[in-house]
Amino acid sequence: PKVIEALARSLERITDARSEDNKMRVAMIRALGSLKDKGATEILTRIATKQDEKQNFLINRLAAQQLGELRDPSAIPSLIKCLFLFAPNHPELRMNDVAAEALILIGRPSLEPLLEVLEGKDPTANAIAKQYIGAVKARRPDLANKMTLRQVTGGEASFALGALGFSEALEPLLREAGSSDTPRKLNAAIALVRIDVPAADEARVRSTLKKVYGELPKGYSGIAMRGQLLAAMAHTYDPDLMPFIYEQVVDKRANPELRLIAVQNYALLANKAEAAQLSRAIAAEPASEAGGYREKFEERRALLDLASECDTGVDCWVSKAASADNNKARKGAYMLGRYGAGKGQAIDALVGQLGSDDLGVRLSALMALDHIADKGSNAAVSKIDELRTREEGQSVWTRFRVEALPIQARLRSRGGTTG
Image 1 (cartoon, rainbow, N blue to C red):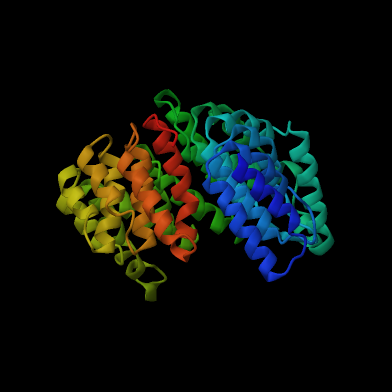
Image 2 (image 1 turned 90 degrees about the vertical axis):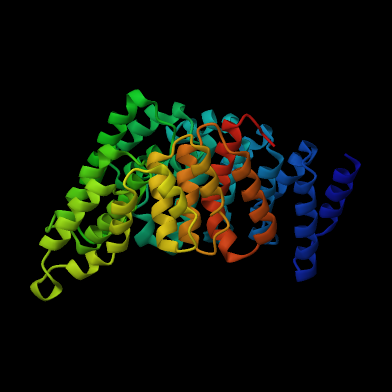
């Protein structure tokens, strides 16, 4: 407590915005978070929510990030505000990512407050989101005219609820996915992929994902949205979604880019029989000079050959997942996500790839771990901590942490630890 008090006093004495001042602020805020003492919550929330042109907004972001280190539920109302706060006069500078990360690290106590935000019942969140839209409108009216209050609040809440993963969010997210607002329904659909869905509700989620996909815009604006949802569907590892993904492969009316995404995801998840089906589709696809895309589809041939070799054999896929070859490692990870539930050797192989030099391999292993480690994984939790210590500040960690920290929190929770 005395250290916290001294750091708080020191922070209050720094009133200028020179480079030296900000360096001192950063060091002191990091020190407050590293103490892991909830006595630091008050000063950190005050800094995180401070709206002052003299305070560099990166300081707000850092304070919110350190609140996640404390895991203090009393910080939740402030972190909900931080989901929507922006730099004065610069609405493009936000802290929604670090605020969501902190809420996720706090865990279950964040669930109900986020559900309130999702359903439009949090007056503070609504007020700040309205201010945010107003600030965007002052600079980019073309963007602001397409934004709605529920779009802004629902998007942030959906992301955080999906990352938390609790099944209690199922019904609210299903309702959100039924919205007539395209961004809201897309965000909710992607969140549905990430939560723990009871077996009895899997068919409802599957049906909702297909429905949302079909309702997304048909033109250019919908290509990225559909591609994003197709990739999310692949991370369900749901065999009953494979026919739907295949339909997108052979739909010659579909956008070529979407067909290529479908081929990629189907090939990553295909067993021997499914690989043979995709091979027939590739053979039937016209070549480029005839207006088709056979050559591009053929680029996934190596994945299909691996499927023919291993089919559904977990031991075989364990060896591929541990490979130094990135193609083999990614395919192995996806197949262990599909067939390796609860198997120790599968979990070990995936943990071994969390430190891969290739971000795609890392993420494939991480997503598969999230799916199959139903009792948590202390080894995965420790490995992510090790990577964080070693790579903090590097671009690879910055890109990896977005998925790694929420999944680490879920694995820790499943294993019954909160450290």
